Image (cartoon, rainbow, N blue to C red; front, side, top):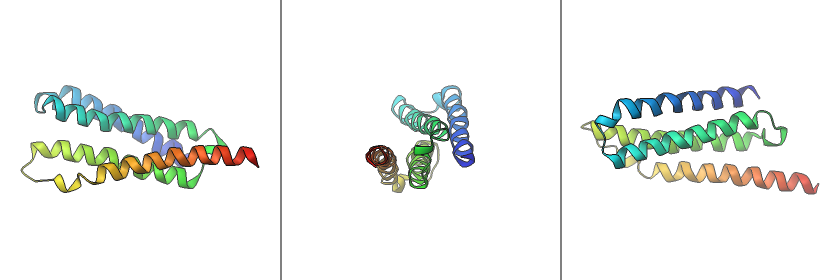
Length: 125
């Protein structure tokens, strides 16, 4: 339960910090499209961080596979978006990270599917 609270709280805290950073600092340096992309990463981090906090209180949802899928999904999805966005301000080309974003999104989808499957499976038994 503690790791759910620690990771969920860290994700939500970081989402607030990065959202404010984007709104107040990056806004002047990013196009609307890049800023929207960055905010998508923030939004997914916030939503899944909150989900982990809720899951910490629901025994059915405290499942190691669900936790790993959410953790790695957020890391790969949101952080790849952050790096790709911030890379626009850098001379380095981070476009090789482009395929990482959908992998992270797929892990998040699998996390939700696993939760639904577990909920359905545990009810039948």
